[in-house]
Image 1: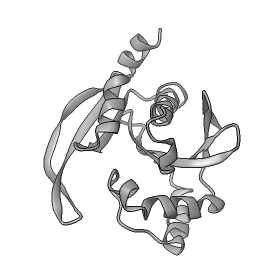
Image 2 (image 1 turned 90 degrees about the horizontal axis):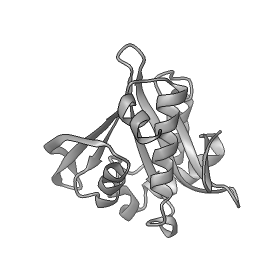
Image 3 (image 1 turned 30 degrees about the vertical axis):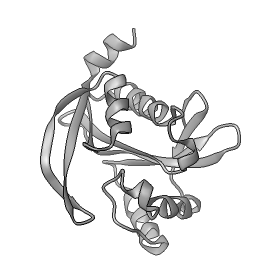
Length: 176
C-alpha cells in the first residue's frame, strides 16, 4: 500500500473494475484522459493481463477515512535498463476534483518511482488543455519537455499532448 495524507493506493482488483468503467465512461472524466469507452468484460480481461506485467503497476486510489474509491493511477512502461517510467492518474469521482487529491496521488507515485523502484526518470503525458494536470506537474517541479502537436485524435479532433518529466536528482533536491 502506498500512502500520503488522506489517500492511499492499492493494487487494482476485480472488485474495482466497476468503478474504473464508470469513471472512464463518464464523458467529462474521459475528456481528461487518453481512453475510449470501456466495458466491464473488457476491463476484466485487461486487468488479468496487466496484473502479471512486470512493466506496470495499476492502482485504485482510496480516500483513507471511508476507504472510498475515488480514482485510479498507474506506473507504466517501467524500464529498468534505461531507469525510467511513465505515470498517469485519474480522479474519477468529480466531487473530489480541485481538492488536492491529484497532487497527493502524483506525490505518492513520485516517491514510489524514485525511492522504491529506484529509477532515474519519471515522465507523464497530458492533454495540453487539461489545465489541472498541467498545474499539478508544474507545482510539483516537473519540467515541461515539450508539446506534441496534433498528437492524438480524440472525439473527432486532433489534440496536443504535453510531456513532463522529473529526474531523481531534481526530486532529491526538492525533498531535502
